[in-house]
Length: 189
Image (cartoon, rainbow, N blue to C red; front, top):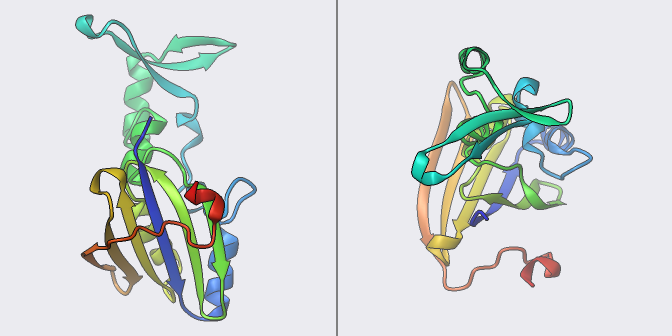
């Protein structure tokens, strides 16, 4: 099981840009869906690394074919790496999203001047997703705070906006009380 990384994202900008962002990141599955920002290549879905006895170092990259797990031949793996930079969804997500899974337990709030999202990711924050969102919507500014289980009550903060390139700043914030989801009582349990 992965360690959780709690994320708080606040997006500010003109009202029309906020409406466009809210519509863009929302899917039937989530209020903030990374697949909408940086879609996983279809060819990488269904890939799975299986391990054998660790002392023998056995492993294989597999895909389900007609209900059976089959090893993906090295030639196909090389072609996937050449085209997508990775031969499996897990590595692609870690490299392109910054985390292995999509956002989960996502909630959102909208005010007149901001969008606020709270969600959890596995292990790490989705920095590349937020940078891609800033590139796509140059009129917005993104404030991102995240904390992981191994750092306890310490929050990191990053801010992203797009000029000619992504401008980012990061700070380390110590807080005595970790309020993950102040508007979601179920998430505190």
